[in-house]
Image (cartoon, rainbow, N blue to C red; front, side, top):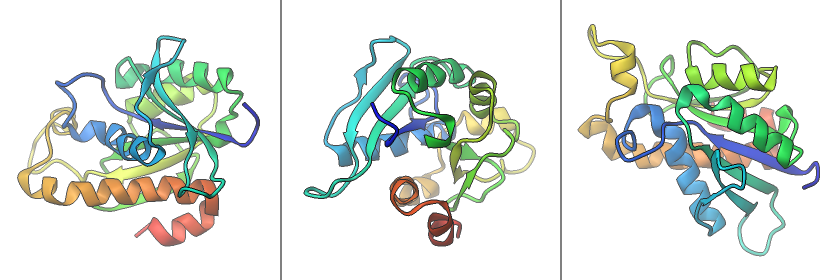
Length: 196
């Protein structure tokens, strides 16, 4: 694939046990994007990820070429599969978008940025380690901090509350829109629109 391709990675943990967890919001966003592309996820020949290849645009418009990806291993091992896909599709880090949960942002808000640290997020840490840089885009989907004294790990690996579940589809759609905007409008315009 040529240099106009984007690699969009939803961070999460595989399998039904984790499906509804806050830590898996990256998977939920890539589900929406795959639906918009009109294709299901399929196993990549590397065996380490599931992918959807195609264009992300309204019908009849030449949208950007995209590889949506989800690693088949756990969150803290995301980096290896992401690096392998980047190499396979010849996508440099500055054309990679990671979609992930973010504790330091309130639920139902998001922030889009380029680069930065991993802020204790194991998926980002793994990606930084494998790619050798943190200079990739992040769509940071807010999950908020745990209530009271609840352990952070228990919180991220738990299901959304009943109240949150009502708003979650809208948050996920917004994050998917932000990914599309990032690829077509660029960082600055996307931040102005989505960094609420």
